[in-house]
Figure (tube, rainbow, N blue to C red):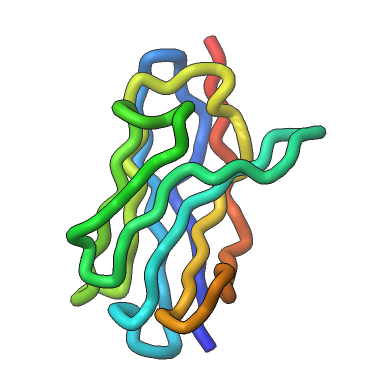
Amino acid sequence: QVQLAESGGGLVQPGGSLRLTCTASGRTFSNYAMGWFRQAPGKEREFVAAISRSGDGSYYGTSVKGRFTASRDNAKNAGYLQMNNLKPEDTAVYYCAAKSLAAFEYEYWGQGTQVSVSA
């Protein structure tokens, strides 16, 4: 089992930045690929970003590409989502998730952290 906990959410003005942290505990963090998702009220969960087990590969959802950057520090059992040039439509609860190499879907999820972008 892997336990995940997000932190770093909050209220920010449009154009501002936030960095989310996903702290992992349990099994060896470097054995798991990481993903970031978000869900706004009344909307479906949306893929935001994913990063490989080693951190050398990442890809992003269309709506955040060029503004958000995923990274990880396996020595610290942590993943990060740097969010720049935030827009009101980025307002959502953000979740981190992890999956092992053999898994087709993400197996473990954090509890989420609220990000609100408003003037």
